[in-house]
Image 1 (cartoon, rainbow, N blue to C red):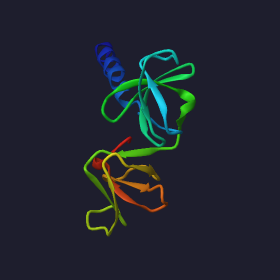
Image 2: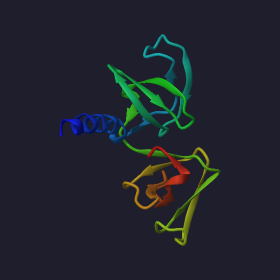
Image 3: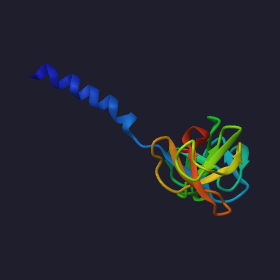
Amino acid sequence: MKRLVLPLLLASALAAPSAQALEFRSVKETGVALYEAPSLSAKKLFAVSRYYPVEVLQNQKEWARVRDATGGIAWIPAAALSKQRWLLVVTPQAGVRGKPAEDGKLLFTVPKDGVLELQEAPQAGWAKVRHRDGSVGYARITDLWGL
């Protein structure tokens, strides 16, 4: 029995990080700078637009270390982030349909780098999304980043 305890503990310890949920946020305002380090005096890497989604990797006081859709890592003031979930289109074009299926009526399309607000948790490969103009439908999760 003791011989089984150690392998079980190791297995559960290794499984724990993969079970940890990813934390995605979006940028509140247009023109927010991302920095090389958690300081306003650090080198500015680039600026992002409102609704741009990022994955939060670490929080440190008033700063968040984030990753973007390209895999780039930078620091952003935590106050510049919203809990509102926006998704980035990463394919040449995402079709948004009336139901979560390929045979659903195509309602509208969104080009690459466009954003859609997540409305409900994804199910069966589809996410319910809302365009900034208020239109709602379903997009394939393979077309989106930020889930």
